[in-house]
Length: 395
Image (cartoon, rainbow, N blue to C red):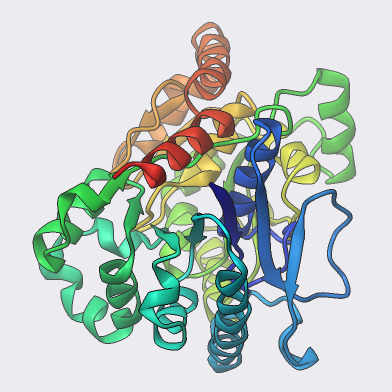
């Protein structure tokens, strides 16, 4: 079957900002190409797409909606709707011309919702319609999120019910989808996110020293957090948790990187640093492009911190372990990352970092090696792409 990986319209693929879902689409496509599979990306039109060698068919939308953004306001939502409508008509045309059954792999609720509204069932039946749920809210306890899901994510509910295959990123999401949406459990498949281990990899000491110098971090130990700056990711909480450790170690800093979704929350992070007297040790590194530039940032870290309130499967964690950088998981991710990750809590994260990263160099070296080996063995996109394809084709 030919595989159509469908971009969300959030930002053009290849992603020029750290947009996780776009990176998934890109890496799955590269994996399929390496396997010799017939694959094509359907994506929003853009005049500033990064240089690439990917097979991409563009969906042309009014130019006002082609600009990349990281905000989640009304313009962003309108852009999603406009792109989804234009996308549906593009896919309808593709379906009319299909000679053999194909796989349409959606990654966004808007895209699949409008596809089902615009494209008649008779045409949709010419493809296996697969949907990956990247929404971490589904991994929380049902009673805590059911009202939000039904009011704000009704399109995603409709999308999953209409799909032939529903891919989810953890067991808790699978449980919620099957039990509370009454979707046939044969349609729901748990799958992991992966990492490009050729891109995200350990660098040598000389390279790391140059990168640290570029960011004015020479002779510093760095605790890093990667992710968009807003409440869910929890940068302010991390500042508060790390403050005692930062104050007791002169050469230790907390650095965070990612697009600013909420200026109000960004200001709150700075306020948390001020109130805890660690402003000089709290460093915002801005937005970073996925790939080589992001790998450099991972490599200047001694450890990364993951503190999201909810997440489907944290791509940043497997990127970090692939770079040989241990991850401190100080939240309930509903996902087991494996070697190279340390489960912590708000109460003991300081002692975890102190014991595993700062004060035990022999154990730390082993942790770094195990992290890299874990990524190579368990999170290759090639293996995950094969799993996607096999499960999508299965009855």
